[in-house]
Length: 171
Image 1 (cartoon, one colour):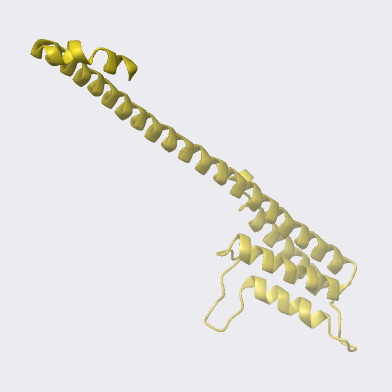
Image 2: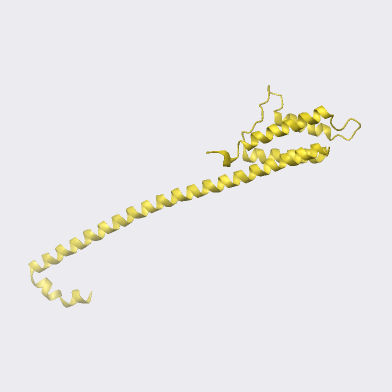
């Protein structure tokens, strides 16, 4: 700024000097414009790269969270299985209901086997009904060996089906 004031007499005295100054001012402005455009393009590229990395990280976190919840589902099935083996049907029912809540949140479309007809229960519903009926507090409460075997087999089939939804098993 000081040099502009100092040399103003020399620059303004001649039209040729003014044209040279104008030319170099235009060149400097165009260079600054090109730098601004390249910086903007670089910023856009960096932003897109960060978005892709963030999306990949979020997907990774979601997979870990899903795997953790599926692990919790499998643990609830194991607790249910053990409770049926030890004939603690109240505990089995509670653990199984906890499994169903986790399953609905993690695998909303999960079906061990679909329901037959509009009023029929799914395999998950049938199993819960059997566990619920075993918790009755009367002389007929409990399960016979074939019923118990059927429930244990269904629990293992459900466990296998849940394990197939584990994100660690996906490509």
